[in-house]
Image 1 (cartoon, rainbow, N blue to C red):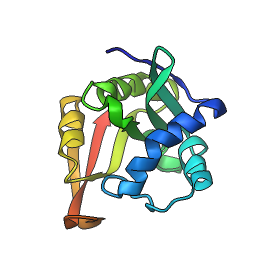
Image 2 (cartoon, one colour):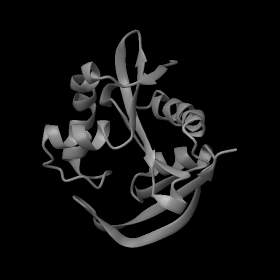
Image 3 (cartoon, rainbow, N blue to C red):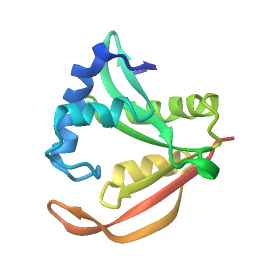
Image 4 (cartoon, helix red, strand yellow):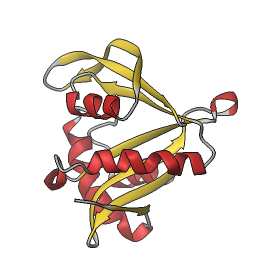
Length: 162
């Protein structure tokens, strides 16, 4: 399955929220309060950078954002977050979003991409990011309180955008 990636619009929010809510509520991959309100989630996802959707035949199957990781001297490095709709997982949507996000990030003036907090138990994401050229450049011991596994490490992953 091949998806089209485009900037998210306000009209996309209900579909984006339907994708984000279960992931945020699970509390096992994102450092977001599992009880985050929908308005706060909307601000977090839609207004602190640029949000995008991945769709096929008009159905939104995933979403991601691109934003500066730091200000000033670190503003050339972006941070991204990706979430795939539960029904679309395992179909390569996250891979396509990550691949699409890299030239978008370059076009926005970013020279590198950094994932600040990849939960070490998220093996599928770690494997995917590594296959796409990201290196683990740091490990934060016991930095994440996993709802089922207790304290687990978080990884910092980085890729220079060629």
